[in-house]
Image 1 (tube, one colour):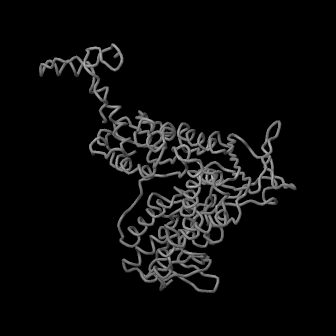
Image 2 (image 1 turned 135 degrees about the vertical axis):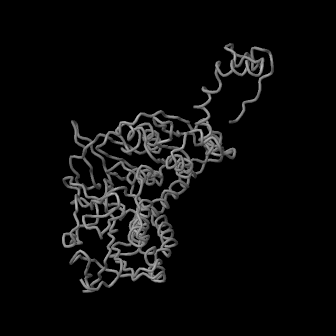
Image 3 (image 1 turned 180 degrees about the vertical axis):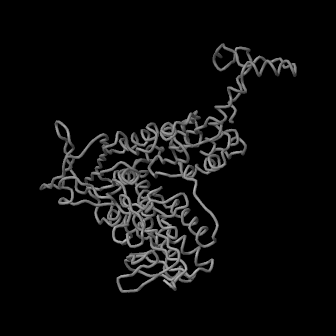
Length: 501
């Protein structure tokens, strides 16, 4: 092709595509952005934003019903109006959507096109109205969508996914959630707290299979306390329709029948690659996803695949980071890769889960020797004050004494992850986390408590005391074996107040 219509062609208007298009256009490249639906992607309309808004609403309703736990008068709120709840969810989407408006990206210098593109060559796409766009560099950022489930009767009976759940006008009295990953578990807890009777089914032997069993167990216990029935290690034989709704039949002898008014399927994602005619572009597709190398290039060097569609890490923040790599490589002409070893993720249940780097499960699978520094939240004063003591911080230390991962399950876990991000990416030793003066009382103190507790035996021991007595002629002997009676230590001196470290 002698002449291209654009310098760079971005296909897909989610987090990855928008990052690439805005950066490229502002750097002076003639940029085309093609999106078949609306800018903002799945995250804005069916994922991150609406799910967090719904979870917050469910949390407030749950706190109202739990008022007596905080010494307040008991409250029995009226039933939830699901239409009003989802109206608020949509208002949150609308408040954020203007950041992703076509007008904004046009003002940045991007040519925005709406339509379903199909490749006619490695450099050229055609839209349904006959418009042809071409570029020397192409970025595929087409995202992902809910994966179907081949269960007998499911398609006939009908089900919903994350695309439908935020537009429900009525709260389902009974809901079965198929899939115990982050989406399924977040929605199970939200609907349970809003008043639905929820059951969760998954073939895996635990919920949140990528998390350590003890971390997932803390969340499962809270789910069950909220009234959610959890069935792990369970397979579905079939789904039936009946006069009283839908029935999910679990395989076994005897079979178990779960009644439902709505079935939410949350069993994973598939890449949105089916209708692009990528074979005309010479791009390989494997199981709906596009394989890429360490620089995010496809089988065609001038085509990158970023965001969910490459199947690496299906997170919005990773999609944005990969978009920045695309800008560096294609617009600036410099190198760029992503260190996936330091990808953080959060699951916004109550208690929340946040993780970066290795957990025990992944370190074991990778054959990495590690030690674990643990800090239970019931020993954190702020957690006690807020009545949120279910949880633990786990700091994994590798063979060279460096932090290789951190997992937090507990209150504000996602907001607590900041120091761990620096520790993992900077390959800090745990002692570096002791450096700052942490404000009291905050849950952030967990880092200092955790590391301080692990270092204490190395400092406060007989050998160190002996050396100090020799060098400085100290007279103390350290802790005594005898237990104090009535708060008076064995030496008869008044008991000292506990020091906070």
